[in-house]
Amino acid sequence: MKLALLLALVLPLAAQQTPAPPPPPAPEPPPAEQEDGVRVSVLGYHDFSETAPESEMIIRTSKFRKQMEAIRNAGLPVITMADFQAWKRGEKDIADKSIVITIDDGWKAVYTDAYPILKEFGFPFTLFLYKNYVDGGGKALTSEMIKEMQKNGATIGSHSVSHSYPQSHRRKGAEAYDKFLKLEFGESKKFLEQKFGGRVTTYAYPGGIHTAEMDPISKEFGYEHLFTVLPGKVRRTNDDHIIPRYIILGTHDRIFELATGFNEISGVAAGANPVIAPQTTPHPVQPEPGTTVGSRLPLLSADLSGVQDMDPKTLTMKVGGFGEVPAVLDAETKVLSWQVNRRLRSPVCQVAVSWLDSKGKPPEVPLRWSFRIDPEASYVPLDDGTPERSSK
Ligand SMILES: [Zn+2]
Image 1 (spheres, rainbow, N blue to C red):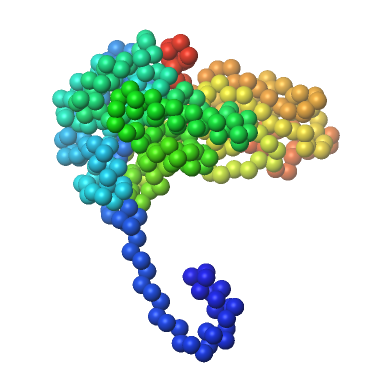
Image 2 (cartoon, rainbow, N blue to C red):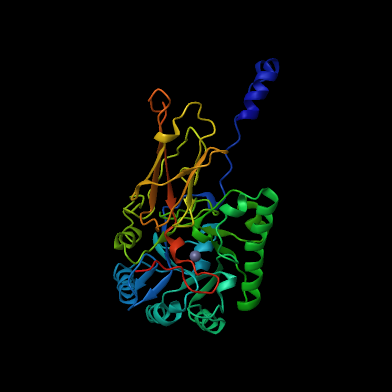
């Protein structure tokens, strides 16, 4: 259209003299871009236990069984990742309402608790494994367990090499970030393919965190379908790089209900993944407004070097759930910061920084922002393989 318009402007004479030919029929979009009315709910699980305290990341084994029963009783087909991918490419039709089951990280309880149930129900599932935790000892799955599950319905997808969150690497600059991403996408794929055979073409972003720099790299390594943790039903037309997925939390039953409800309400359960409106702050702050952080103990800071007139004695920082906190102002850099010293519990953290000028007046634009905490953050294994579980 733009070209036609441009030509019409550049060549007004020609356009007047020759009757315009009828516009060519719009080409048929390839099947993958055609909306077919199908909705797929991708469920994401982590760890399972009948005895450990329930948490977001640990679901009761008996509750998991009940959920699988609910899926079967509702007549919702659980499809393989291969079928999901074929549908997404436009190569295959699937049932209007379908379920895909995925399990992240590679906890041993996948084998001891979830797998027997999945096998009993005949439900296929995908294991998103990260290289450094396979055969990691302790609570990690072993290669043997994974290979056995492969024979009974498990597909392997990648969940990176190190499971580290991208923000800190991205801050080091484009070159360092590029190197980091190539390692995480490339080495994990190579490792999993060599160890377990087949092609690995799916990826679950650690913490669900996706940045635009990832897209050409994941494509270069041959990944086709990449999953976030943003809840919602998958349509055939969804961007393959940011496929929605419901993370089923052990403590929030509503998310499972939404995921399997197919009631067209874009599923945002209370407390699951609250949507944060885009925000701008009058001064630079960390964590950046609206972003998701991979730690429940982040450093909060506000760069106040641009504030012209401030009475430092009136400066305060308030944090949701904490009230006023003892933030420190660096006299030289004018950066006010506070290290969160107790795990943030809510999925969203709000911060407000306020002060008065020498005349006792507050700033015209208040400095307030919020960011999101990845629920998985409290459940990432430490280097020694023990999970960073919140102490009870
Ligand atoms: Zn994970």
